[in-house]
Length: 613
Ligand code: M6R
Image (cartoon, rainbow, N blue to C red; front, side):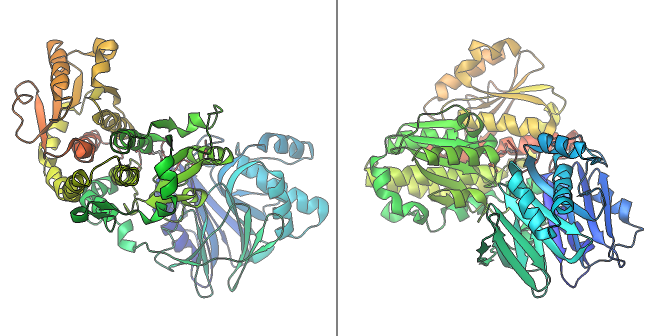
């Protein structure tokens, strides 16, 4: 939610900031702005509603040379997307300016106090209130800027990642974080600041992840990090593993399509070094210290949002089936507010691609307070969630730029599959021979995903038939039910077609009323334990004139004879069907969205990481 970039050094800041904003645009894309210092050391702020490219057009004839600068790409919370609500926001005297990601929850009371003192606000944002507060503190107390920022941050409630520039301190950027991510890139005589490492990686691999409640005072040749209580912190410099080419489209029209096609690789990377099929062994280094816990655990609670929640539902089937531990899957946003019963005996698994989702983080904090052990399943290395949890497993899917999650989902399901078998192995709920059988088959999944991707041309033909639909139902049973939910979410978020996912058997309890000749119904009807039941559900739809698109196992003729279209996927064990059945659903949504002229990588109203609740 909102992307932040800053630069101080010897190079021209503007191109670095703009390029960084393009890389962060997946975080928010309703408006953008930059702040630079001109040669007279005056702060210059340029901002515009719209995409980063609109800002570039706006600024194109302006002299932007400056070796210090910062920029912001916004996902609106307080105040509609507009020029005046875009960041940066400035103090009344225009000597200070700020960019911000997060929400200042007590901004109203601060604003009222400042209004009473004569402050005039030009926007509807909470961010502008914060920079006026810093100005006010300086004015009232005569404190230097560094100290005034620290005092102001002690007065605000909420989440923030901020960068502040001052005309009076032309050689310094001040950055701070609480609850919103911030990375500092360390160069020689230069520093980079960003919401994540993607704008930084082409300049330096040395980074510092700022911790909550830390403030960084950044000069060209000096970096000082203090805690908000004024104690000096020792920065920990880490090496980035990210490669620049991972952030490019690599010849694909959209990041989403590239990421769909990356799935054989991402699933392989998730499995690498973790399974030994011939020995029937799963190894998960990240959680190995918790073997005793896993042997004795009474209950597992999975918390997540959106697509990650769907992966959690697949995990529920797998863990219950193989490890025989009861699992509850919770929306993190609900869990955090309903005083859940959690004990020290519980294991909570938090799933998140970004590792920054505010609701998931709050759910983790709550479960931690109640004494539970917390595992994370996360994609972004070094993000907040892996740092909040006791232990965990990275999915290794690589950067996911398309706002609609694709490869992150299959990598999460893969990680949960590994966890299910790992727990089963520790608890002795699976035989060695079964484990050998399953792991041998799991090892083949990347190749089977490659094969499944060959359905693309056929899926495109189907997409063309249904691209003008206004509604769509997705139905599946067992672990294919979460796949149906995920198929529906993909379609609605990128094509804006209303879609619902349901357990196939639940259709007759309500949704069947919707079925008519205008309603496409997508079934996951592979040959597994509920195959016959799903066939009956398909008949029920056909009898009411609905159009059936069915994902079937290779060679199936029964469903072929009743469906309008079938998409064949390779045969595999029931446990692994979600990893294959998801692929054509991703492709279907992608092609429909492209055919409808939608912006698939940056769907309206959405942002990649939801760092506000
Ligand atoms: O980064 P997270 O996995 O925590 O994000 C959770 C959801 O916001 C995310 O999956 C969202 O639903 C995606 N837009 C789905 O495509």
